[in-house]
Length: 503
Ligand SMILES: [Zn+2]
Image 1 (cartoon, rainbow, N blue to C red):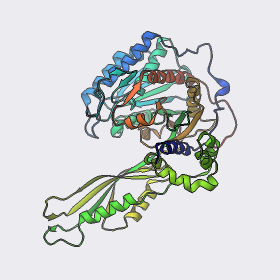
Image 2 (image 1 turned 120 degrees about the horizontal axis):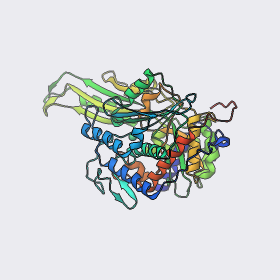
Image 3 (image 1 turned 90 degrees about the vertical axis):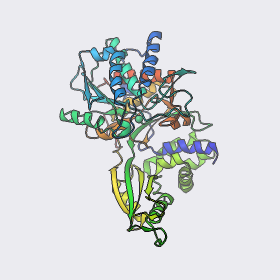
Image 4 (image 1 turned 180 degrees about the vertical axis):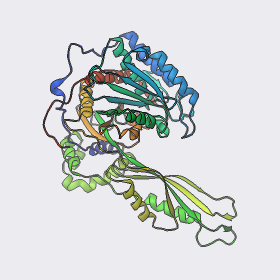
């Protein structure tokens, strides 16, 4: 497959994930909070230097989560000290309460002046996945600046958000800002390994206090750019759902024996055949439902020939488009439940028929399916009673958050994208194929939005959990600016167009 086609498909599928209509935001347009109290998002030279230096310092603290049980707790504690030092206003303002939750996570409660407005929450996490130095252009925890980029693990996932949120608040406080609408900032310390010690506890704490949130903003969606040669337009995707997941163990147990007189089938052979069937039998392609098609038609003209023709005439080309999309591994993951064989263990000695063979499969569930449906499909594909299935962990895809004219969180993001990135004309809801800490917060709100105001190209996409993760100084400044604007925009009373609109 040519690079061009791969790229076209990448964007195409992202657009295909759209649940609601592609529309210019009407909700907040008439009522921008541009009162006299509006603070312009302009930062002085000294502030801009301090801003990037603060991020570099954060990258240098190796807050690694290794697994559920093991993380660099010294670094996690050091990070807590670090943010105290770098953001003194945040930690000393009378209307901000700071709490450490689950030993290392941070919860800030910012009391607004108008208690009638429902609070919202900004989220991020400061733990990172391990980064062995091999293959990196610069050491992963150096925070080195080179060619306009700050390099290191966590520059995109997700210390950029942690630092940008606190930085934006610090800058607002220095300008004597007092919010109208209360909000929370939740910074998790174990997102990369489940969020059970951080986000889950913060969520329980807020619930015990009777908090209900208007909306939540976390990482997970981006401004996708450069995915299609020939199409210059960037696409801002606000993820309104994320995939579910199952960790499934397959096990075959047999009577052990000597390898000199082997049985016709061994546990290894039976299990290998089963996992091979799973790998060879993809889950159903979920491409092609109602509103999706409408979006496709509206955006069809953005694609170069001949794709514009395909997308404009799905009645004819649906089977073709469906096949094209599943040929690329990234776009394939966007339109179906995926099955990845991640562990395989068997055998104790070279001349012993092993009693047990085990394999682990990591399944990511498309939002149109459930854990139960997928388990049924797996059973039917394995189709061998000797293979026992044990669910190690499972959760359904996250509910789809509203993205209509009345959805406050969505519309605030939409409005802020338009004002901070005026060059972006395509803003669309989508899904997140990874998982975030938001999974722990569904009890507090129905409006969960995943959006990082960062341009992401295919190379950047690969650097998540990979090599040479980096962020441009300029991109980081825009992220701070975005949050600075978003916090002020959130002081609006409500979405202003009072008409019925079904998603
Ligand atoms: Zn992350």
